[in-house]
Length: 208
Image (cartoon, rainbow, N blue to C red; front, side):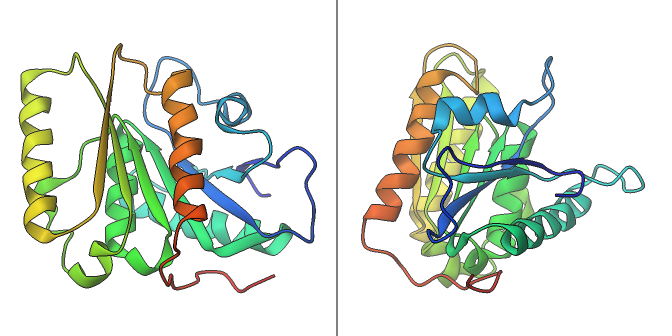
């Protein structure tokens, strides 16, 4: 679907509306491999897409946001996506962008996950506070993070507590954002959210 990388679940059924994971990778020594990552998340539960920023665009967050909307539209057009189960998942700097995009458009997403990416504290992302409060968020951190990162994480927890917003945090040993344990928890967290009591979510794409 264009230049985007798309993962289709094993045993895909057109009659079933799948949750969609929109992956925003960060800078890493190895190129991001969507298929390999989804093998560790789940082979059956999700459709997934990695939006590709156009070579004519710069790599700033607004261009990445445009790429996200284009990718969602293309996937919704060609595959059976549940319009109220679209999740942003970011790694490293991609996690920061996932927080930015989700808080700017909280009614368009069912949830947001950051794997090792901090919340952009200085950007005033709670302007739509009522909707942000209803948006489930997960921040995955590492036990060996630096003092500066630990302080920022503490400030993030204080901000969310004061705002009454939902942020779950999980801490892992090691420093691999895409470890098997973390990716298993991505699957579990999203499926727990789906199987729980759903909150109304504005649809970005029309029902199939």
